[in-house]
Length: 194
Length: 194
Image 1 (tube, rainbow over the protein chains, first blue to last red):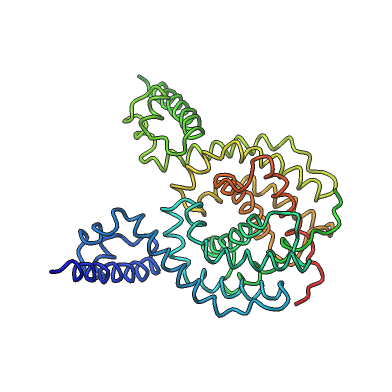
Image 2: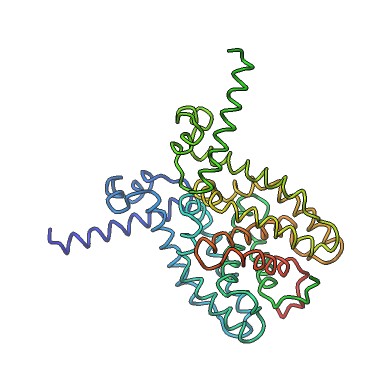
């Protein structure tokens, strides 16, 4: 085989493994490398050839899911009142998180929180721009760093996934809870009693 | 040895292992079972006799740190304006989280978020009572479940630990950021534009 053919083969094999990883981890956060290899129609050795550990495979699958989700969010209208735009962005982002809850659990059990946040850099940049516009227009608070506010929204969304997993929140309640919490947290602070 | 002497020996050995685990994981979140055994003055086999896996040892050490922290928070004055009481509770709780950041990282890398939250049941109950009093007095919002608000505070505090780890927040800024965020998130929502 030429080098070029080998490279094309390897790319197809990686794509099939990632497809299989997304499908298997999307059903069961503890899906094993053997199960994923079987679903991809390749051997375990081939999987380990591309991804030296299960954690690296989960990382790559999670990265692809976020990339696809980020592209899907291109369709959200972020114009107009920044609070309404943020509510629309939360509703659409939450749909993606909700569909990926099993994958998120898989990621949380093998990747540190810092890595999970780093993989969200693209989607978080979108929130960042919206927060900056809202601050410029005086509807979001300017007394806390933008990166802190974006991290707060990220944590509140992932808290919703945990609360659903624990049975304390129903999936259909989550977007409303997240929006109500984040809009208050981002609002200019009320006259403080302190 | 009598059964009683054996039991007392086992208890001393477990206590020494947990002391060593807290010391080692408090310096290095990736401290190994061998390092912890050495610091405790016992063999690895003894550690595994009490804690079948590193994750179970981290779980037990983390549980003990939370229990000690929970006892330390008994001294916080929770009377008076619930917002001021919450600010005092956040400041004291954050000191504990800040001192335990290395241990928290160790826990986050081997325990799922649901387990980490479950281990905080004691401290969270204290927040729950304060939130309920604040709702009864009309200063905290009543439109979202209490458990959701408590989970939000938990997430915001752990987000602060992650932000410090990532170098985006300085440790001395954290209590102020957490308090400003949580007090807004817990306030009765402002007149909504939506």
